[in-house]
Image (cartoon, rainbow, N blue to C red):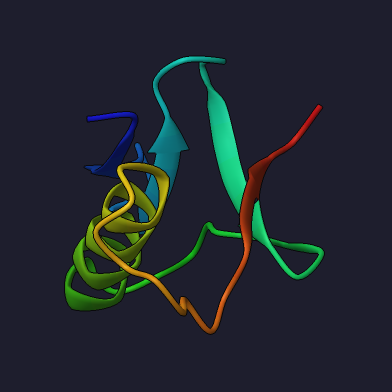
Length: 65
């Protein structure tokens, strides 16, 4: 598992790239300020996409460099 949904100190949620220790981003949007459900869903999609489980993922995932 590379991406995880975590809660920040302001009680918002984000998708965290555990490999790079940075927030993840999607289509130029940093995945912070999310609800818990949004963060969990996006983290699941990202993890499925990198493990090859999702063939036609509608959303490319990358980490902030």
